[in-house]
Image (cartoon, rainbow, N blue to C red; front, side):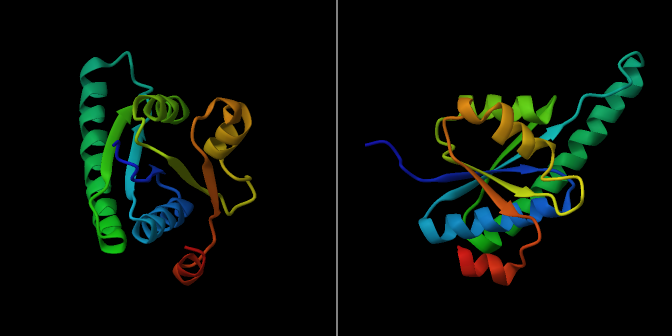
Length: 156
């Protein structure tokens, strides 16, 4: 019998609301016996003509991404009680997100948090619920980016 554990995927970036998505996913994983997966995408470099400099920058970005993922993995363990799956990829966030969802059949729910500023929900949410909504094989949970931990506890 195949494993039916729910895997809650969170896209890791530098936005404030990402923490809300992370905490929501970790709480849902805890209450449902699921797991969390974290995806961080390193954007393409603009210095493609400067090979050695670009390579050094990529290495630094990779190290920073690994440190960020380890810090966030600890948060997930503290909340959910389980070690998350970690994915670090290079490229465009929307493209790498869709590839990961296609490649990993165990991923069952995408959790995103809406931006809290005047800029709208955020480019990734706009892309996923707009252009890609008919092509996704999994549901998308969009969490308001301003929720407190107490509010997240109440809804998870």
